[in-house]
Image (cartoon, rainbow, N blue to C red; front, side):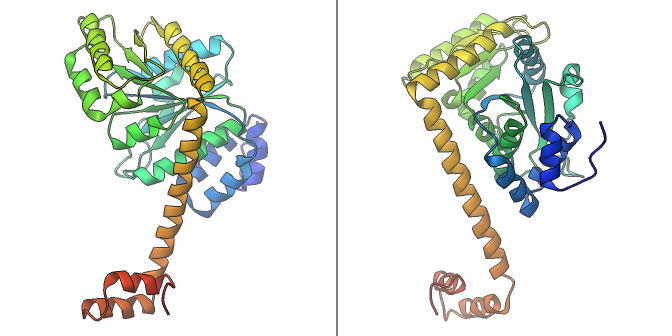
Amino acid sequence: MARPRTQDPDELFALAREGDRLALARMLSIVERGGDPARAVGRLVHAHAGAVATVGITGAPGAGKSTLTSALIAQMRADDERVAVLAIDPSSPFTGGAILGDRVRMGDHATDDGVFIRSMATRGHLGGLALATPEAVRVLGAVGFPWIVIETVGVGQVEVEVAGATDTRVVVLNPGWGDAVQANKAGLMEIADVFVINKADRPGVSEAVRDVEQMLELGADRAWRPPVLTTVGTTGAGVTELWGAIRDHREAARASGELADRTAARQADELHRIVAERLLARARELGGGPRFDELLGAVAQRRLDPWSAADQLLGGEA
């Protein structure tokens, strides 16, 4: 297949829908960079995205999430499901790009046309990632991936928020009390739909299951009680059950109306973020002209309070 040289969103989208993976990668790069080109991509794919199923996989660093995700992909492909993975990586301090490469993470699937894996950098900025991720999901849905897995590298604010903005949230822990405490402190108990004790071939797995079950008993009642599963990502043990739990949760959430509620909440949150970003851009524009300097001087001389100065900048007062 010829390598697409164009940066035109319409041409890239047409190529990507025909299966051109480089064109798809370029569209996602445009989305990550943001700005007017990203908005053009967003307008283009919105009507074509359709309904996609999103799965968030998060947990403490070292829990084996990437290995488990790779095993889950294999299980999904065994059921002939096309799947895309967005791997949320820490940003490179030098380039701003993702440090961990997608093929390094899950190279076994690199040549499978039914799998597309993309690393996305946090860039140290939650707002940018929170806007880029749902747009990337729509791009992937629009080119024919009905299942999208979002895997995060840790359990910080960025990772929890991104993983939480999915239909089904999988929290991965390891045997040992420390992970359970970390999960509780990080707020993962509240977002989890499925708990996985990975590396279950190690000592302490039964204690880890018991700890999570006890915390669930102390938590708020929910229509869906998160199952606590055990897996060994390196061998694939328990991954069939994990795939089944993900599908069971999706069906239960659809039947109860929770899936629709989550979708509506995500859309509202995204719209709020877009409005906030546009207002921030407008504020930066207003902050660079002579009128800003004039009002700033008035504030510095205490002839005007900053709130009134802002009103005047925004056209609230003459």
